[in-house]
Length: 422
Image (cartoon, rainbow, N blue to C red):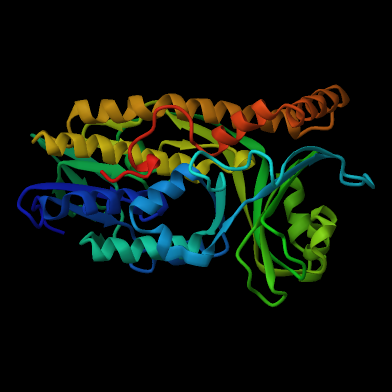
């Protein structure tokens, strides 16, 4: 790596981390500014970075879909994006013979947002990451297969320094290097959070009956078990993704057996409506935690995605928060560049943090509260939450409100989340 300021001799931005939010930001800025802004992505897993996403899938909310559409990514996904047209929420113990449905969003009910599209689509991470990588290359984004360890401000520039001491100069560095961000720690930005006594388990399940776009979320005492519709395929013709929250102490016993034993545990929790099951990918388990950076910025440094915040997957909003970060930061940087101002200035970074911090705190608090409310077997709480779900089910206005929140379609939004180009 060199100390040059970029291919154009002008402005440069470096993204540390080739995950989906980081790639989305890089693409948005490269498309908006062309040669006027050199954009580079540094990640030791590149150029084969898409492989890290194998077996994972995300619920992309309407705002994220509009953003990916404005960037030309959504059309590339084609049939890989499966709309969620119905949602069924139930609450019971694992051994209960009946799973009463307390809340549903069905066909003919408010499952759409203002542009007439479903409030969310399920998208597998691998094709999404591959589409972003291809589009970034076409837009002129540079890729460096090396991580970054720290930054150092020198005058009106910042040096991005690799573990071996090599440095590259830019106007702004974006830390999109995950929850254990080396750049965040090196900058001395504090982290507030805690671990849950739970693990998340993800897998792709084949089944021989069509899901019809229906998603299931079944609340169990150990945590939610979600069945989310994927595009058709696989040996049995139809597929779904599961996001299974389980007590961490029980995970080795649940996943440590033979494949048929693991599938048996999944079948105990899975909906019987989809027929015969087959394990297509996974399962993979990972520890769950909540965390938020004390600041989303440092000197010529912005935190993005998991480097800024980690939330419980109970509402499936982790990726959507990262995409909203990318939209807000791209808009702040673009505003400065079009006025001939410094894209790494304190003003730009303060505007970015102001745009994202409240929404992040609100979503983090909501998911933490939902997990504490539903991941237990206390009878008073069970009665209260089931009563609450039943009331929402009978009030169309509240349903529309919750759909709008889940779709990220309320309040002031960056242009990209509205489907507008920068």
